[in-house]
Image (cartoon, rainbow, N blue to C red; front, side):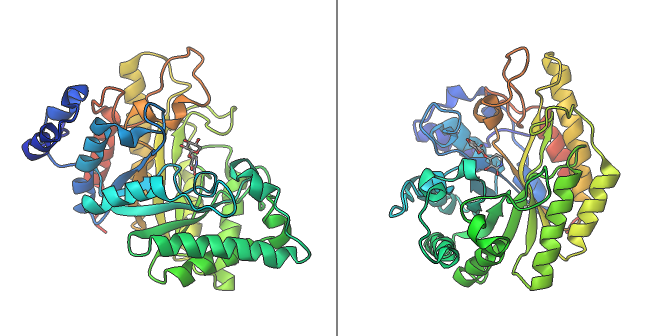
Length: 380
Ligand code: XIL
């Protein structure tokens, strides 16, 4: 096992008066971090970080032991929620940058890159009520366009030079139809919303990496979603809309979004067909939200962790066989803070184990699987 803090990091942690004893697994080993392993292949490794209230599942940042893992293992970070409209834009007048700034400052101090998630999560259930109920007036299309452009120009300018990659739009394709989801914005703008959002982002930061992010998955039951996303990307290419990459969320494992999907129902062939289509459009691939849902696995921890690690390895090997895959971000590094603890409970009510570190900050077989996949990857 090659994890833990080196002596310098351990000393820094102690000197800072932080709760070293809360993280027994951390002090045990030395060795290359996941990001260092990724770097040797021209890739990067990182995680989402929750900036929520201390003690909540999304409040990982306030935990010094979690920050120590992030400092040791990561080269790139993303906000779990802090840049979403429902946090950033509590009302039309306000841009509440404080939590998001805190993470960007931390990244700058530690020499870490930052991704921006997301300029537009185009789903009604994740939009603030003031957007869903907005009065677009007598020229609704131009007012909707103004709202989107103003938001993007403001946020991207605020982080220019510090956030270098943007999930411009998140999850705008409805997996049940393969078509655009209906929101108060798309009602007036239709598919034009995509062109507007990407155009506004490019204008605000000509050097930024522009990404469309979604959860169409490797596993069975996502064919319609994949077709819809591919159609969207093809259309963007045809219209000359600026886009650099597809963000593949990669929440793999037990049917996160479709209760009928079990564990390990991957369809490599079909998935490769989709990825070939995407890369054929000259787009890069990013693994933006990796975790392995163990909801449907039996309780036994050893075999559960092994099954999670095996599935991860198969998935990462497949993804890394595409030289276009350069970044891997986990959706949280420690089981204690995984978003999956709050959703889709296990039938035995037990805690889940979807991330590389257990609830006591000890590295798990999933950590080793990620390390091994980086080691096996061809350089890019
Ligand atoms: C999730 C967060 O992890 C939760 O804390 C929040 O309550 C809801 O959103 N796909 C995405 C992420 O693009 O933004 C989602 O994050 C997880 C699924």
